[in-house]
Every structure is written in structure tokens, then in C-alpha cells.
Length: 288
Image (cartoon, rainbow, N blue to C red; front, side, top):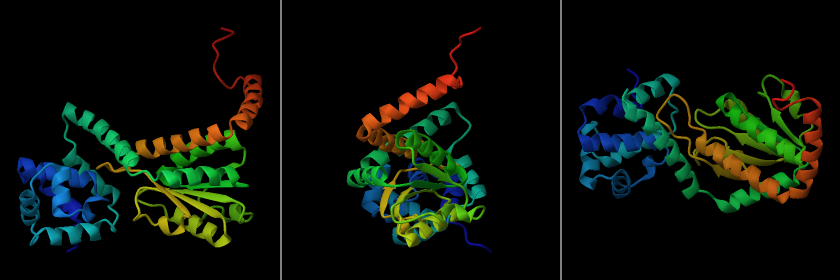
């Protein structure tokens, strides 16, 4: 019989848990990338329970103690949950009450807060400088992360005029044939990570391009291929990732790049406004 992921086990046992155990379980399921590396004291403090409660929780789940539970969580964080697994977990964490609606908003707020608190400002400044100096900028983002890639590509290209969103490398590998040391490749991927994005970043690294990884944690497979790394929390105990914090991080990047290229951006925008007006790109309500 296949061994269950520890997070699946926690979710399935929630109905039998005490109030403090449910509180601890909820915290763990909302912070699956960070919790495996907390001590008993650190987890207890963050979850708002006693250290004794953490130890009893581990025993309740069938482990000899917290150390064994911690080992299982560290192993499980390497094993990406399937979409079906995550749906099961979300059904335990979010019930059908009206309060669950607000809980999801609160979890998104918590993701933004976590991203702010753990932001590497030097890395952010380095990324801005790298993007400003790049001859051509290529963005690789696949599956659900493509939405973030499209947003970043749209505004970077308006400001810089040299940004391209790549499709899956398996479909069109020749799109990278001009890639060289003067170019920049931005890889965006969150768990479950896209193989195509990882492969593109590895290839870009081989070609000598400067690489930027935007991902969820230092456990991401993009990390070995990123010259500079920016992380944003995307944890939500559902079958999809929360992109609220990653999008906020990208908003910050775009804003600072726009500030650095103020004059050039104004010139480009003036020309673009003429084109947009010529083709009636934006609704004006006139003529009716």
C-alpha cells in the first residue's frame, strides 16, 4: 500500500482533532514549505499553541515524537502533492460556511505579508538593474504561471521594448536559437513546477544568459539555474496556487523599472497612445 503524504494524513485526521490540534493542523497546511524546518518552540509560537501540544500532535498522528513528524514533513515537501490530493486537503481546511470565504482572503493577505517580511531587497534591486541592461529579455512561464508571465511581459515590453514571452520549449525549441550572454531569461514557476520552465532555465544557464528565478521557495527546482532569485509565497491549501503575492512582487519590479526609465517610458507611451487612439484600442463611449 502506498504511503500517504504527511499533509494528506493531517488533513484526513482533522475531523477527529481537538480545537488546539485543528489550529496547529491548519497552520501547518497553510505553511507547508516553511514548517518542516521549524523547531518545536518555533512552530508552537507561530501556530499559537504550547510546545506540549506540538509533541502531542505528532503522537496523535502516529509518530514517536516531533522529530519523526519533522522528518516526514521534510521528506513530503520534496514530494509534490497531486491536484487530487490538494482538493482533498482544501475540503478539510475550508468548510462550506460563509466564514470560509473570508478565510481565503486572509490567507492571501498572509501570503503578501510573508513575501514582504522575507523579501531580499538587494536581490530585487539587482533584478531591476539586470532587466534594464539586458539586450533581449525572455520570459519562460508555463501552465498556470503563464498568467504571471503574460502580465510581466506586457508591461516590461511597454517600458523597455525588448521583452518576449516564450512558449513551451517542447513545442518550439528553435525560439531560443539566438539566446546569448547579453540576454536575460526570467523563469517563473510555482509548485507544482513546470518541467518546461526548468529545462528552459537550464538551457539559458548553459548559453551564458543572465537568469532570474521567480518562485515560491529555496526548495524550488529553478533555484540552481537562477543567477538571482526572488521568492513570493503562494501557499493556499487548495488545488491551485495563490498568485496574489507573486503578482504584487511583479508589480513592484515593474514600478521600479518604470521609475528608472521615466523619460524613455514617457516617449514610448506617447507613441503608443497615438497608435491606441488610431485603432480605438480603449473604449471611449463616443459616437453613440
